[in-house]
Amino acid sequence: MSNWTAFNFGKTIGAVNDGGVILFDEQHTDLARITLKRNKEVVLVSLNIYGWIDHTRFFNSDTDAQREYRAMRSSVKDILDLIYNDASDLKIWEAISEFVRRFP
Image (cartoon, rainbow, N blue to C red; front, side, top):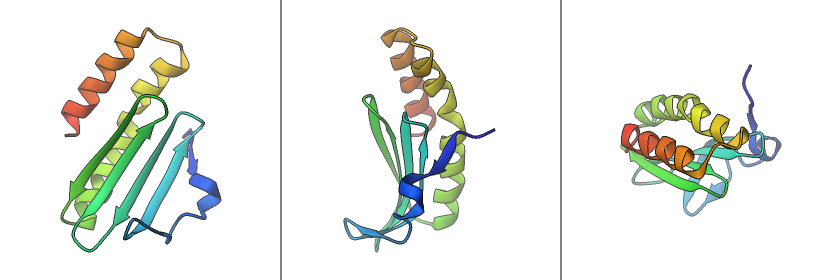
């Protein structure tokens, strides 16, 4: 079962934000948001873990960005589980560091 749902009931899809069009936009309960947006130069995948990190990656193609969007969305589960289960800040930052190394 996935805890990911459309952010703001899907109202952001197709919206223009900072010169780009939002293609995918999901929220994990109240812990995180992941967005895929295309602008004229690049395709961006942004992951925000509320109160912890805002990590944005840049791609040249929709295909690459969509593949990485799915991989990031499934991989962030470990970090969210630590936060949800009140793990120590050190364990959470270690998991975040590993995530950023895996998804530079």
